[in-house]
Image (cartoon, rainbow, N blue to C red; front, side):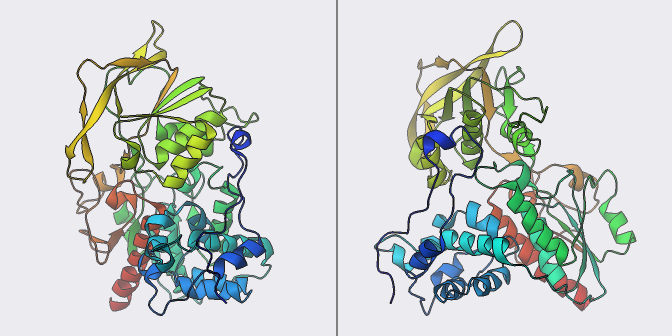
Length: 462
């Protein structure tokens, strides 16, 4: 019998006062009993709209049906037909605006907890499966992937399953891209990311690190080496700034740098000597998920006061509702309808404050959100010793500047045919943040999967 409870089975979490001072995972995951209870809420619709909301097209009712039967490995097999990173997606995908937003249970009550169930299945597999992954038979064709982030890893995994010899070239010393350097440990444990990557290696994917493509080798040289197609999934790692006075002061970070020092370089661990300021009072500029990650990380480094400075209201914040909720629970203070105009410093060049102006919402702009307008004479200064700028990133120009025939738009994003992910250069495909600018992990994965299908068709037709 279906479970007709109007509410999702609650996700167990650390107490906010405890978790705000450690980097352990906030949500601790469903037990088997909880997963069975939540899976029974699925109505197994004949026309499942939830699938249409998933960028990688996971057959959601099918995997949930396997959970109901107690066949968790069967559920894992259903998910991994479409997704190369289920344990990641179950944790960081914005399900509430994608698959769960289409769930019919959500019309009058809460939707089925699809993301929570995906996480349960992936974690169950990681903790219990002891078999070996069968490497597909080679089809004799070689493909290069530039960037070991979500889009690159997904493209590589999808092609490896079809028998391609795939080599991934990663600029950092560790594969994973934004999953490793951007998303904090308390949202996405790094051991889980590396476990997912090990699974891809077992499929036959080769990953070469410390390979800054465009410097050590060009795309044209990859073709000369026998690769028949190239996928570019280099992400958006170039931080944007506000170009306001004082951004060069000591104590001003881009969110990219701040999070990379913490996540990839382990600045929060005493045994690592990664340099980072441990501020007492922090202002984080921005209202997206990255701003929430930076603010919550600052708390865990020992900050006493952490402010999110955002020029619109909470309704307009692009961050996930869950991330805003968790941040507020942990003590992050939202300074809404405030906009920074100047970073204040002392004679030694150290940050001492952030001058802001109060805003009010006017008419909607092109994005549909009401445009913030400054209130004259409302300037004030927040007393802080660090400022973190989290207003988005742009793609790094290295690949496009070293690849003749590869076109980009005025924002620096690689131009592709959206139906195929094909670029303006023959045999080269691209996806993820390198094409869209900073977006979600699952959208990047969807682009990687789509590109893999197009690359397969391109090579087979050749």
